[in-house]
Image (cartoon, rainbow, N blue to C red; front, side):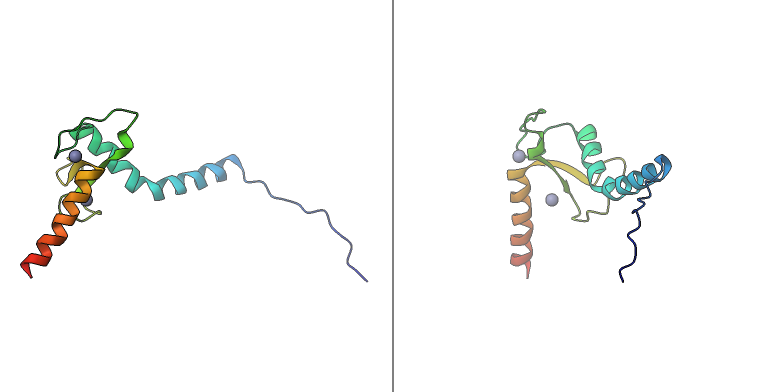
Length: 104
Ligand SMILES: [Zn+2]
Ligand SMILES: [Zn+2]
């Protein structure tokens, strides 16, 4: 004997519930997305090393470098950020590694 199939009732989230979920998701991603926007605002869309300027078409190539290497250190005044193009950013980090290596 099989139990009678009941109509599946899907509980739709209310608008408030949906908004709360979106807010929670937004908060999770805020940290990383936000400091880049802020840094670009403070320092401008220019690579701090080679001086290359960026516009909307290639802005994704400009990255934010943390001067002290701590990605959680994001002071609002931008003092720990440096806008670097992908090339200079890589260069900066390989230098760090080489520096560490040479000082050991
Ligand atoms: Zn550069
Ligand atoms: Zn970096």
